[in-house]
Length: 274
Image (tube, helix red, strand yellow):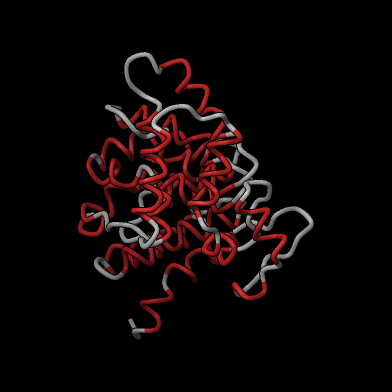
């Protein structure tokens, strides 16, 4: 996760200074490490955010949801609270107020709150194009943790329409912002991290080639590492595809960037002696 400006993140929960934890749970600070995100009592954070935003929609239901989710894993808690916040903002008589509250969640100082907003924006009957459009500001967030939640929040929708996702995300591979280019790769990984597998691309990774090809020599290591991880995922099910593709890339794109990407992509196959 991206470090909060001017502050080194704790590596163990016991190392988090009490004043930092208080600031995190009051929504006054960004996390500077994964450990800090895990340490936040999200029920306390929610209570402070509801007060700060003068939240007046389904407030007691939101508190109850936070308690119910308290024993879940961090992604499940984040998703559950985000969806509950989103549901509280839709419905008759809530359109204008709900839109304002979601906007304020999305612009919040604390990345953990913006994580909720990723899921809040996905609530409702939306097309995949609409879901990706709503995810884009979070995919470009300055905090790497928010960028991860951005694609997790649309992962199930992508799994449901993988070919449509490729078509919609192909223009993202040409974006000036490397965070958006990386999203196109990371959101469609065949296996991925903390998420359901994308069976269609495990079986037929060639269906996503139009996302991978433009990024094979990307000038951003952040993007290249994601593409390499995509191919490493694919190598577990379709080593033939990955070997053929990387051989072609090395022949067609003899750059240091492509060479480094390919070495990373083939790490599992090389360990296996393939």
